[in-house]
Length: 243
View (cartoon, rainbow, N blue to C red):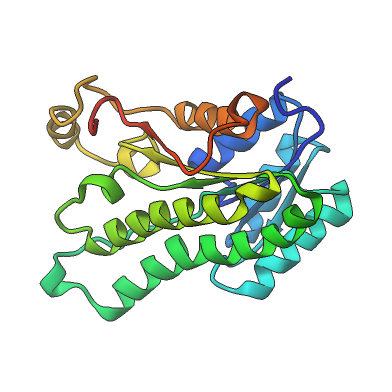
């Protein structure tokens, strides 16, 4: 087991990539705390995962919520080893039509949310002189995409944030890395028409969407001892869409 007895917090952990990550870390011996703004969903998901999972409602844009999740994780499991900043949203629109609220909400959840949880978790990890932080960015933060100026800015900012934190925390044995997924099968891609999917496939050399488990495996690697000398890096999981 590659993360046996380690404790992980996964934001946005009730579904999609977050849930797949929690499932895999549990399988590999970890204890996980998943948090989500949807209380009923996060509670039911955690209950289905078993006794080594804890589900908590949290709004990543609210610092006190983030601090509360970290405290409850340490209170229940005794420590904190891994933070996965996965919570994120989209509010797509052409730039000239994009509203202030569409811009602010995406930046607040995708970027400030990661800042809030990193700040809360860092206090514990710095004292322990050990930790792994993994930020789920996006290929859009690397290559841009029309109609997603807010999302691209948030994910590009998250990549830069990752690099800064990696340098700041390296002397305390805390590794900070990012994963930049491409198109991954989620409920958002499930609703696309076959024609829309085919158009997207033409952008991907592997001609298919990835699975949430593909990203989860990247998280597991970066959280494990196999990645002990890797920090400040961006792992692309995109089927060759961006190289």
